[in-house]
Length: 224
Image (spheres, rainbow, N blue to C red):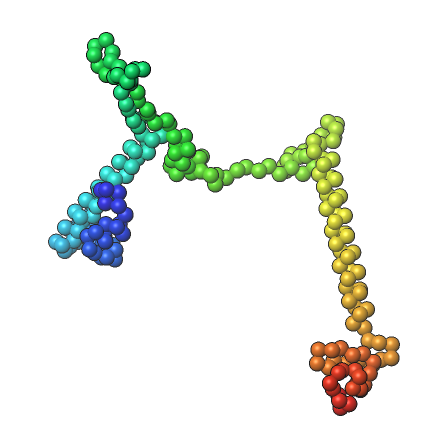
C-alpha cells in the first residue's frame, strides 16, 4: 500500500481475499468501539486495530508522494537532460575556474495538469461540470422585473415576438396537415354507396362482390 497499490493488488500480493481484509477492518472498528465504551473486547481485535492504523498510514504516505510528484510536474523546473558544451573543434568548454559547462533542459510548468488537479480538489469552482447560471428573459425583461414603457420597447422584444410568431405558424400548419390526413383516412374507410361491406380473402381486399370467380384470384376455384 505504501507504494501506491490498491487494496485489491495488496490483497493479491499478500495472498488473502478482499473479504478477509474488510472483515479484519470491521473487527478492528468493533474492538475500538468496545474499548471506548468500556466493554470487553477480544485481544485479537486489538492487534487488528493496530494493523488497520498501519494500513491507513501506508496509504497516507503513498498519497503524499503522489501529491509531491504532481506538484513538481505542475510547477516545472525538473532536470530532464544535460550534456557538456563543446566548442567548434569538439572540445569540452570550461569556465575560468576550469569547471565544465553544461547545457541543461528543464521541464516546463504543466497547466493542463494544474487544471485537472483543481477540478478534482475544488470541483464546484474548477470542475468541467460546474453549474452555469442561465438567465431567462421574457420580452427582454427578467422575471420579477418591470419594464418602463417610457423607455421604449424592451431590448430583444422584437426578436422574441418574431420567434413566437414563427412557432405559432408552424404549430398551426402541423395541425392543419394532421386534420387533412385524418379526413382522408376517414373517407377511404367509409362503406361503398351500395352498402356492401368490404370482404377480405387472404391478403387481398375486395369491395362490392359477394362471390369471387376464378378470374379474380389466380389458382382459386368458384367456392371462395
